[in-house]
Image 1 (cartoon, rainbow, N blue to C red):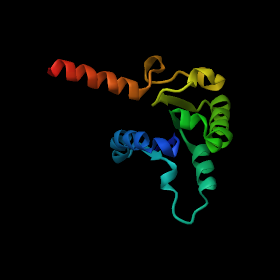
Image 2: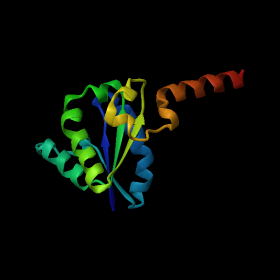
Image 3: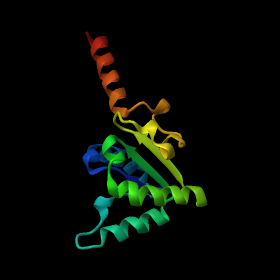
Image 4: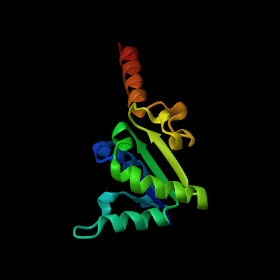
Length: 138
């Protein structure tokens, strides 16, 4: 079973939960093991758990926001390990832009194809869809 590592700022937990819901469909079918740091058991060494999952992950999804890009732990521990595995082992790393931020200014990040298409933040896309739906309903 493939392990998917979710990297996110705790300030963006609602986005992580939404993604978990969608990936949970595949997890329920035994196709994926979706992992985020909330799965660390009470009393366990959380850093050791994170490092172990990064080492075995088949795919990493990065939920990109300004909070993600200013997280000391994410930038000093998670990102370097994920990028090293990407370079050495071909780990697939998918940045998902969830909120507007200066992600294009980050060299390592602008080199990886982000989602949604054209790096448009999900939040901005949701607002456009809501506005368009409201106009169509009127």
